[in-house]
Image: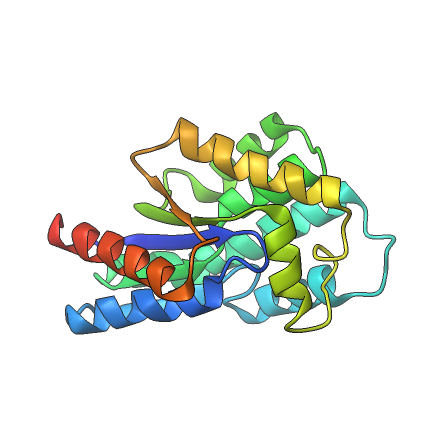
Length: 208
């Protein structure tokens, strides 16, 4: 039996790292064999792209180059890790996937959505997440949280308007695909958010 594919999305500061751990505990409690990965990343090529895109001081990376790098890393990720795991019956938990590309490159960078859709279909074929957990919170709250933990990456350094477009694109996608994307109010207390995520995952597991 093919495994399930779960992704977690959200703006910086939304609590993805903490809630990935919540999801992992739910899977482990249910004795589900899974692999955990991230994007960009998950493979040697993907981690190289991650370093280039997130941490490079080279501001000359163009929007088109950035978009293509994301999908190049994703193609390798799918071929090397995601598809083999799913085919073996393992579940895959991924910190960000293509919804992030729509949000950051499409919403934030204002890249044509049609171009992203074309690349998505070419690289992924029919592969889509079975469940996406979207941690949503106001931009100013996310900025405060993210700013208190580490040096900002290239996306965290973007202006307020960029981040608003990212959030709105995420929410637009959730409205368009409510059966796949579940929105969690990440502005609430940590315990309340974790409990909401755990309930969602347990329900998903129970429904098969």
